[in-house]
Length: 231
Image (cartoon, rainbow, N blue to C red; front, side, top):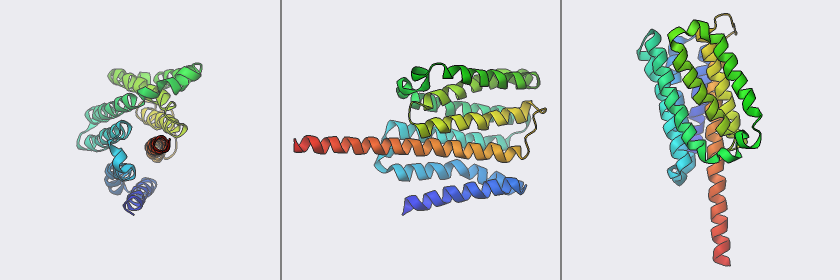
């Protein structure tokens, strides 16, 4: 019951936030954005149950925590300071994801289909080319963040298809942020809406994928334990 309530809260906050963006209700959009990651983290913790102690779930919750800081802290700052704070906190969140997904690297596209890495590299180079001129002194932190983000997305493919899709959508979301900040020649209608839609979907896909993996691993371990006892 509590899990369903947590899921309902997460979906409800997400829908209200997206509607607020479309309706240009800035205050409501700001408030609900700060609530997005705590709601999702609550759902993850309740859904995982005792499995919340597993390494993958713990690291997921830590990453969601830094993502929340990336959503919240920049609202207290202005200009470049706010942008750098956002990049900094989300950089830590991506590093945590990298650590979480590293044990699955041998199942990722980097090991199974190395040629796919050229597509990720081309996307990152293209993004930097579009943003480089306007980014100025902020280009270095943006490139560092981009490398971590795209590396996370590659490693995510080794965890599961759902987590891999979440990593890819995360790349889309943060690429839109970079284009909005540093490539004014690229115009996407309702950019803020698409940024947040892809962001919410990315985090949700990663969370659901991790929960499924942990749940299936627990079920497999329980089955083997019962089989061993019978044997």
